[in-house]
Length: 185
Image (cartoon, rainbow, N blue to C red; front, side, top):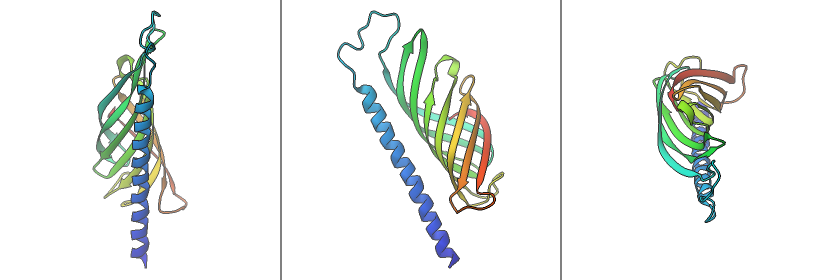
């Protein structure tokens, strides 16, 4: 009886992660198409600030140390637009990445902003998290969904904090905070 429930829980978690990845792909497609729609004269301006957007599609990567994954490496894709406004570089991106780690793995879709001056900026991500053996803080072999905040003061280096809820039902400890530090996504 219990194994059937565990199988149903795994199917539900996989369906949730599949939905997250599908939504991220659609969001990325819409964002890229919307930023590509410009009028013929929009790129030709005599003002000192440029309002012309440059669309970028870049690889995304990162290395992180923290809970619950211990050590992890992220790899994905980042797409969005860059422009100048009032003499400052501006940028808005959508990122889609996977992050396998020693004790946990993540799949995320993120909004990333202001990666201009010296690699500073912030990001907000929706994340699916799956623990494996011996994770820090969370239960082994469990699935969580939640949100994360990245802060990069300089050179895409900084902390990430997250709030996650267990997919396996409510309990006295069904909500968890996570934290780590690293470079990149």
